[in-house]
Image (cartoon, rainbow, N blue to C red; front, side):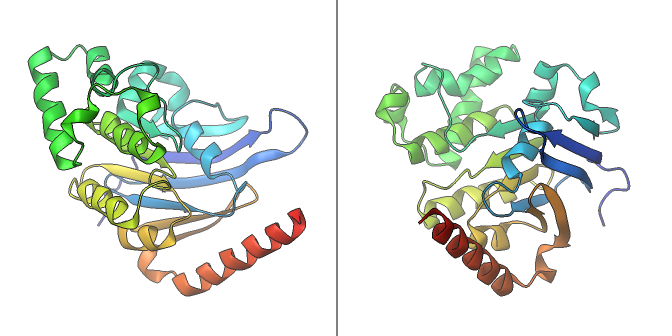
Length: 247
């Protein structure tokens, strides 16, 4: 049974496009409880990334209110919020740092002692199988898949309450992606909201699915209740239609 009080609550949230008169998200309402593992699914342009950016305050809603543990997001200082709600982007950056400096950076901001930083880094490096010889590399010396793995570690060392993932394993092989999600699933208190096109991973990892279509939340369903085969066929047809329109 989930707790009675939601960790995240969206109330009629909309996000207007920067240019033009249309909305990227329209009238989105839902509740998320501690420990939920949610897959954001939908075709490209359906609003998955826009929703994640709102939850991290990279963007602000045009209408409606987002609450974190009962407090409106706009009332929470951005730095404090992002220590609790970490976002990992599809193409992460290391901000000109070495891997080691990038991994330690969130803990430096939290004024964690150097000995604790080293201990926590070593723990997560081992759990996510990050080679020691990566530590002195910079962004240009890593592949996209390697940067994705480093970015996930960088988020986890900060021990957030909520982890937002935007196509976090798109450049990883299935085995490596599954290993990362398996580690995440071991923390029952960590809430994960993951935008992905990898339906097999979503089916195995997530307990809930939010289906987005043209900026609207059209379905909020338990993963085990979803007809995954039908969903795969729907996405396949959408991809074919999109390809034919481009051609």
